[in-house]
Every structure is written in C-alpha cells, then in structure tokens.
Image 1: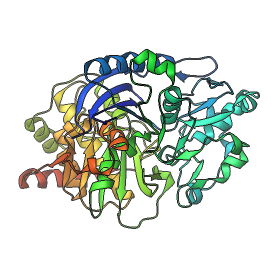
Image 2: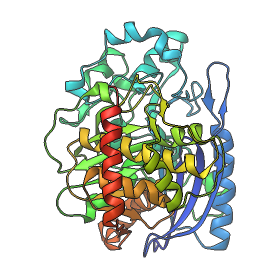
Image 3: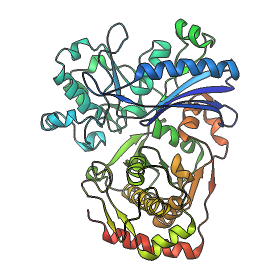
Image 4: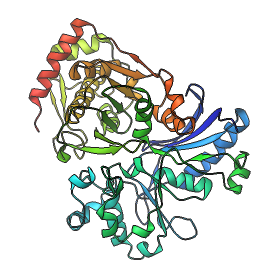
Length: 459
C-alpha cells in the first residue's frame, strides 16, 4: 500500500485531535478536535478515553471516505500510562497527571525513587512523574498491582486499541517518568522497586509498526485491515523529530501548547538543575536531549482570562516605554522559576486587552529564554505550535537569546513529526520554517526590557 495519507491521533493535554497528513510534504489535509475533558472519578480524576475512542473511529471513517487513509500514527502528551488487565481493558481509569493525590505519599515515594543522576527526571508535582502515579495508585487500590497485566505508555495505549499489540516507546519513557535511564537506554531501578518488571510492555522504536488493524476497527472505520499502525511518540519529541533528521549543527526546538518544552541538540555542556525544571528527554533516535519546560499555554490562558485583540506594535511600545512587566510564575509548580509568586511591575493592564496581551507575550518569551539558557542552547531556535503565530513572543525570544528564531509553517508540529514515523527520514527534507527578522531599534528596546526583567526576577 502506498502511504499517501497518514492519519495522526494527537492527544494533547487540552485537546484531542485527528489530523490527516499528506506524506509528500507533511501538510495537513484535514484536522478535527475535541476538548480533552477530565472526568472527576471515581476512583480518581481521569481522561475520557472512551469519548476519544469514539471520536477517533468516527473521524477515521470520515477521513477515509473523503481522502483515503493509508497509515496511522499516534502522538500524545507525556506523564501518562495505561494499566491493562488480562483481557486488554483498563484495570483502572487513566489518571490525570494534574491530580494532587501522589503528593500525599511524596515522602514515601522518595525512599524508592532513583536519583536525578540516574534518570534525568526531576521530582515534579502531582502525577507528572509516572513512577509517582503508579506508587500512589498501587497504594490507593491494593488490588490494582495484581490486576495489572501490562503497562503501556500513552501513545501505545491508542496503538493497542487499534492493533491489540502492547508496547512502549523510548520518547514516552524518557519523559520525566522516573522509569527510564536515558544514558544506558534501559529501565531504571524504580521498575524493580515497584515490582512491575514483568508487567512492562516491550520497548520498541517509535517508527516500528505495531501491526495491522484489529478486524473490528477495520469494520468500524472502513479502512483496509492491513493498514499499518506505527508505534507512536511523545508529542514534544514529535515536534523535535523533523529537525533531528534534517538540521546540522547545534539548535533548539521550542514546542508550545499547554506546555512549552525547550529541547537542545548539540548544545553547550551544562549541569542540569532539577530544581529549575530541567530534565533529559529522549529523542526518537534514542539519544538524550537536555530539556526544560513550563506551562506556558496554561499561564497565557490564566493571565489573559479569555479572547483579546492582537497587540499592535503600538501596544508593545507602551509596555516597553512604561516598563510594565509580568514577573514569574503564574503556575508556580513548574518551570525555571518554580516556587515564585507572580506579580506585576508597573500598572497592570486589564485582562483581555491588547496591552495585556503584549506584556504576557514578552513574559512568556523571557521565561522560554531562561529555559533555553538552562539547557545550554546554541544556534537557531525553532518554535513550533501556537506561539509560532505570536510575533511579540518571537521577537523577544530572538533578542533575549541572541539567536535567530524560526517558526513552523505547519498547523501543528506534532502531527508532522508523528507522520514522519511512517514516511521516514526522506520526508524531513521539506522546509518547515522561515526566518523571523527583528529591526535594530526594536531589538535595542527589547534587549533593555529583557535585562530589566531578568534583574527584577527573584529565584
């Protein structure tokens, strides 16, 4: 079968998507979305996987009828695992990683958790470490461990629903799970400590084919039964993949969405500080990638409080001239300014105003620049996702990092990256980004603002 169109299941923290990607140029032919609503429980807050599954099946049927679907790939947010019982159904609902339950047993978990030097995984709040999730879930439900037959990471849960084949991939395991040793490329000591060694699904490459469709899935979608389903990949690493395959020399990719994740390739050697939310991600090729992140999309939404008009250059001029600054951190549990309390310097602009939009964009760029500094960034910065459309953010990021900034021309970098698992390295030759210029006068004023903002930060 010729792989002309790849359907990409893309489950982000805020929205679930299905995108149909053209294999020849990685452009998106069609995209549909639904909110990733969290159900309250019992037994704990969890993702609406059955709602997502119905959405996926319905739209695979529609995509195939309209355009033809020749392969399926998957990308999802991290910090998520599915516990399967012997008949392949969920042994328990999939925990929402923002639930604070794991914090209740944090001290006990620390007694078995491997050190940062082994895993490159910082201690994070709630269930952001999958190991902490499992430790808490097994303690909350004493029968869960024995009921669990296989543990799969989240992209592979959807692959399992499609093919019946259980697996894990290195990018999802290498996403601050505490379960992986990224330098050795093996499970960490935590897997044995939790007593789950025999429950971990096989670890395969993201580009491996899990198998063809289950007969009932083929019947419901109209897809040929032999349609290949690729293993899948963590979403930030999906954004990184086209550039890992194509770019030469040092560079960084900033994947934006609910999370802003900065990943450095061939950067300067630095000592990663887990207290500042740095970590080691693992690329689709299995290589460690120093990374840092903060909840930039969430901070944007909280700060703005709703829709607002796009800021003009005049709005940016007002913010710069009056020295109005938003200081970190709006979401204080994560990021390079973890534990700091957000505050305004100068007159706080009203919510949902263009002036506030300009100030928030400058803030988000400066926090992103701090993330990049903490992971030894060198070379150009490539911005993926929603922030690639924010010119104020992009200009400040260029000035604050002293780097050329490029932006993705695709709707979602995650879809293109996941589709590349099916297309292969030859598909990474298309130009996906363009340079962003910054004039000298604006550059000087942004540089002065950046220096003043950084001097006012409290770490």
